[in-house]
Image (cartoon, rainbow, N blue to C red; front, top):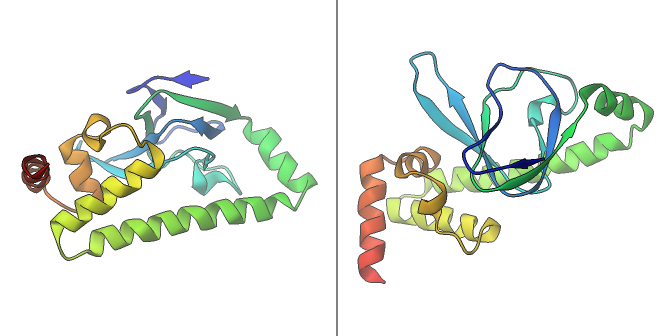
Amino acid sequence: MILHKGETLFRQGESGPLYRLHKGLLKIVRLHADGNSTLVNMIVPDELIPHHSLLSPNPYYGTAVALVTSEIEAISPSEWYRSLEQDPRKYRDIALQLQDKLRMMQQRIDQLTEAAPAEKLRKLQGWFQTHIASVPITDILTQDEIGQFIGLRRETVNRLLRAQSASE
């Protein structure tokens, strides 16, 4: 299936299939009881989601939204879990995928713990270039989302982006 920028794949609290992202980029947004939402994760090509349901079914933790036009394959939960029972080697594939996601999250923690806000932004921009090289991060995420993802206020992100523009 094709999902265009801004379209929702699934919503927080719902249950349903697993998905493999073949092409594109998704964001996972968590809605809080007070109505605020937080960008909590980004999904890159070849990931199978939701991660917390790869071994057993669970409701979706957040809402998945396409950041760019994305190609996605729906995977039947009953077929997925049956295939795990029939071929225990698939658990190794899941472990490797989760290992890759853990490494990505470790990079994100590095971004969050950088001392200088400008360095946090630079690292996120570098990460983005590895996944969508030709598109500026500000065409994909709002300044508020950028701030949420690297632990900065929107105003700080705005100031840093203006300073980058002035130095180019």
